[in-house]
Every structure is written in C-alpha cells, then in structure tokens.
Length: 315
Ligand code: AVJ
Image 1 (cartoon, helix red, strand yellow):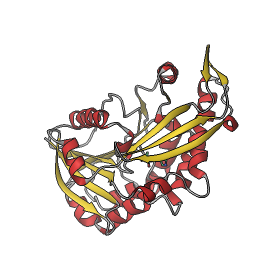
Image 2 (tube, protein in one colour; image 1 turned 90 degrees about the vertical axis):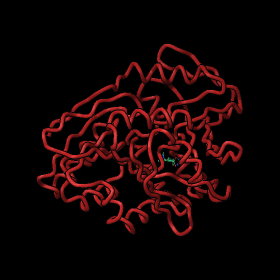
Image 3 (spheres, rainbow, N blue to C red; image 1 turned 180 degrees about the vertical axis):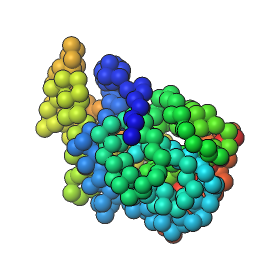
Image 4 (cartoon, rainbow, N blue to C red; image 1 turned 30 degrees about the vertical axis):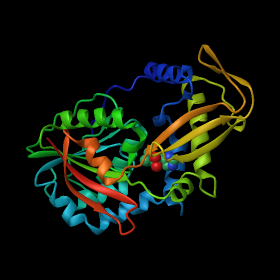
C-alpha cells in the first residue's frame, strides 16, 4: 500500500500556534486535540451517556444504510475526510459492492495506517489510496488507476461544526471543487436543541471532555517544545445560544508565563484560551450554509431530532 503525504509541515503548525496565542482572546488550533492520547480520549467521549452525537449518527446510518448508499451510485470513489470512524466507514463500504476505490484522508499517518491495515485484512481486493494530509487546507486527490463514475465524500461526526459558518462555506467550496461537479457529500450535522442537553454533552460527569480539552496543552508541549502545565488550567464549555455554538475554553488558574519554542507568552489569572467551536445548525440554517455550493438531496434524522445525516450534491 502506497501512502502519499501532502501539506503537513511542522513549521506551519508552530506558526499557527503562535499566531493564535497572539490574538485576544487567545486561541489554539482545534485539530491539535488529536494526538494519540487525544484520539483515545475522543473515543472515550463517544461512549459517554451525555455525548449523544456518535451513537445517534451511527444509528441513523445503520437504520437507513440501503437508502443512503443508493445515493452514491455504482463504481464510485469514496473519499473519507478524517479517517477516525472505522465503524461508520465499514458500514458504507459493506453496502457499496461496486466501489472503485477508497481514499481515506487523515492528518495522522499512524492513525491512517492502522485503521487501513484492519480494513484491508477483511476487504481483500478493495483499492485503498490513503492520503496523509490536512484536509482543512488545499489538497489534491491521488490518481485513481481504476475506472470510476463519480466521487463521493464522507464527512461524519459533525466535524463541520468546528468551523465558523464562513470558514465552513469556504471549506465546502473547496471540497466541492476538489471532488468536482455532481460529486456527492454525505455529511453528519449536529442539530440545535435544548441548552441543557448541549451543555451536558461537553461537560460529562466523568470529566473525560475536560481531560480531552487539557490534553491539547500536552500535545503542544511535545510538538513544539512548550512548557504548559495542565494543572494550571481548567476546562470550561458552554452552549452560546446567541451564536448557536458550543465554545470550549481553557482557563488559566493563575498569572503565568509559558515558553513556546523561542517565545514567552503571558497569561493572566482567569484568562481564557479558546480551543474549540462546535456549531449546531437547524436544518434550515444548514441549507442556507450550503446554498450555491451543494444541493441538499436528502436528510435523515433520528426520532428525537438530535442529529442529521445529509446527502449533498455539488452544483
Ligand atoms: C468530532 C469535532 C465534532 O465538536 O462535538 C467532542 C469534538 N469536542 N467533545 C464535537 C468534541 C468535545 C466533536 N467533533
């Protein structure tokens, strides 16, 4: 299996971190949650009672898989944006018997290689073209040495919610461009709902989300030789109803100075660092968001209308 790498440069990451910490309020790149420990913690989050998105999305996929895969058409190339969800992708692949190729894209090469080794083991004959890339930036699809009719992407987990609406639009434009006119996009979109349900989903009683949030500092320490002490920060997450998003922050517990590569950055007591947005959409909001880029061909929701899975077609 040949693995291609694109657009992931260490220097870029250091600049992104420093730029974010120069802003007021300070912020850190959300994608840095996912080192090995962070990915493990995220898997634990997905199992929590309070965290409904993962299990709800999986149930929607499972309950409607025949209908969902009918939108993909024969001999398609399946592109997975962020390849963390092996259960969901297996479900799709198992119901796409004429699949021409599978292109998993992930920023972590270890993650990508491991999950694809597992997949390859019980899907002999499947053409896999793994691509190590930061899919939030411009990337090119690998050359597929097989005849195919259409390209369809899969973007589960409501990860689209991590972008601001403006950035989500430019991201979707880029994906539509990269995959081409008439390409499909099967996307998971978390829905607006009662604040108490949302607040609980990001403040679980076991404190796993807090651990996940704080772990970004350990990851940065290892990545760019910084000296954050996770004991001197605390987790804060809440649903901001005015703007329709969860905000996750880390709050500095004292006045402190942190070394990051060759820079020193000061934090005041109670100062916050924004680590993540997770926007929630109504079906109408989301339709508006994709307007002019994709047509919404079909929407599936669960009985409690917590989450949606949508099939979009690039215009
Ligand atoms: C997978 C990025 C969509 O925003 O709900 C879970 C990440 N953050 N708990 C989300 C997350 C805190 C998750 N996404």
